[in-house]
Every structure is written in structure tokens, then in C-alpha cells.
Length: 144
Image (cartoon, rainbow, N blue to C red; front, side, top):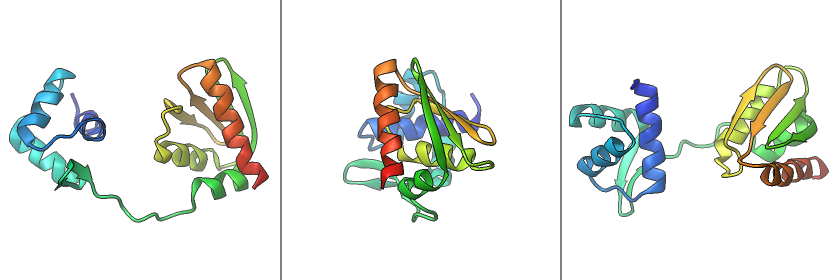
């Protein structure tokens, strides 16, 4: 496993579970097939900005450095089409990445992942019904 994957799994685990010790984190990682020594976990936790709270380890949220999803969608989204569990979003040229990043940062359960080109974003939803609801949600930003 590479470092990026391991750190992604750490973030996923601390969001899903209350983890209070590095030992417990190592055990949870082992369950998903990621072996990590204590020294590696310490380094990963420091790099990820994790802090121990009363509710377990959490990532310190960085201050918002850009416009919110409402602004980005209203400014750059031009069209949204559903195809089964996929959404194809058309954007202004050069702004697909901005929309994909905004969606990824929202961490919505209905967005499994995104792929961005120059003026097109592919949004993957769990199923067709969710994709249709997500399309409506995104198009609502154009009415603001």
C-alpha cells in the first residue's frame, strides 16, 4: 500500500468510527488490509493534522480558502445530464476541476467520486435514483 492510500484509509476510518488510540487505528487499518507500524501512524497523523478530541481522533479543518459550492455552481455549471448512476456536468471552459473539487470537498454520500476534464465533470452516484436527485440538487444552485 502506498502512503496516499494509507492516509486516505486513516481519514475514512476516523470519520466512520470513534478511534481513541493508535493501537485501535492500526487494528482498524488491518481489517481493511493496510498494515502500518506505530511510527508510520504517528507520521501520518502529524501530516494529516489529526488531533485527539473527546470524540476520538479528528482532522483539524483548514479555514475555507475559496468560494462555497453555491457560488461555484452558480458561476460555472451550464448543464447536468443523468445517465443511469452517472451525471455529466458541462461547465464553462477550464472550470470542470473547480466543480469537481467543490463536490469532493462537500463529502456528500450521494457522490461516490468525480472525474474532471476541461469543461466536463463525470459524477458517479451509487444508483440511478440518487443520480436523478443529485441532478435536481445541483440545478437548484442555478436558481439562486
